[in-house]
Length: 458
Ligand SMILES: Cc1cc2nc3c(=O)[nH]c(=O)nc-3n(C[C@H](O)[C@H](O)[C@H](O)COP(=O)(O)OP(=O)(O)OC[C@H]3O[C@@H](n4cnc5c(N)ncnc54)[C@H](O)[C@@H]3O)c2cc1C
Image (cartoon, protein in one colour):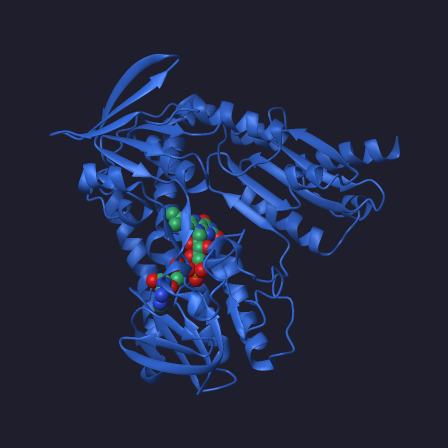
């Protein structure tokens, strides 16, 4: 009987293995498919390579914002190969690490549970005292569209395999993955049309910032809010999409349809009902939000498989800490310890830190909102990137910073600073005693913090 069996070797599973091996050799890690992680192969990394080329191209084409006249001839024909070259660099590093592990610890195959301490893979059964389930998630697809379109229907799993940038693209969805990819392709010259079921882009929950983001992003990107295709047809040259806009039937033709309508957990592959017959509704599993324990079992479900924070850094820490819950069982600890931090690599970037506006209002927390617009902010003007705004949320009673939402250039960096001060439970007065270098975008944050403090003091 193994001490721990880890199911899934993505970010969370690999992190769990690397922690577990420090304490016991009596472990097994089993993975279906490639061992190079969703993040490195088809997620965080290739998407950020694409976005990086897109942002650079945008900056070259908009160099007039810093008084440069540029006659540019931009050849984008290497972009997709560049995405794959760097993607391969990242996946190779992961695979090299996995290759160095004891081969007796690794099995390739799909796991199913037989009962609460036995699994089966490749027709063989294995038992363990505890399990870490880290099976991740997979893109949702509309099967009728896939059947109709064949290879012209793609998700984030296939998009980075496109040999060349397409001439045109329809993106279904306006969530984080949809907006990041749609905006990047659009900036790279791909005629992109987004069909968004809701009137929302990315992840911002503040109505003020969400409206601002919609206005700004749809200046360059054709987003059809509240519209989904009525009909999708495969044609010789591509994909014909019929839809209705302002009560008028419309048609566009594009080369590919990129579906980005969310992701579903891979827990459905595990036959968890063999552990407990009540585990048939996978969305309603009795998983403790803090310890990630499944029911009363020595089974911990980490990473994207069951989460409200499908993020790489959350998956990595959950995988690592779940090992200690396995080894100390039944004495277990909370493993959801990070201050929430989510970043959308749109342009400008969006970020949500700590408590978001929506959760604070729905919990009826007594807080004030400090606001700053970056339109007239010194450093943002200097950079020629004076777009967007930020909000900080401060508890009226404790004066502690609770959270923030940002839609601004370099939000990724400011969001880190904010998440660190939130995790230190600093009050607004303590934060405003910190140095703010001049001239920086962080001075804009100070403006928002001061705006909040004025309201607290009034
Ligand atoms: C396009 C895109 C962009 C993203 N960008 C970012 C970003 O910028 N920043 C960020 O933080 N996050 C980003 N993410 C999210 C991030 O990639 C995930 O949070 C992270 O990869 C989750 O890791 P995981 O270990 O839970 O799952 P995965 O890495 O998906 O690993 C799960 C593994 O389990 C295997 N498996 C499934 N079922 C079974 C079974 N029954 N038996 C055995 N093995 C099984 C799978 O094949 C897979 O190998 C992005 C995701 C996508 C798709």
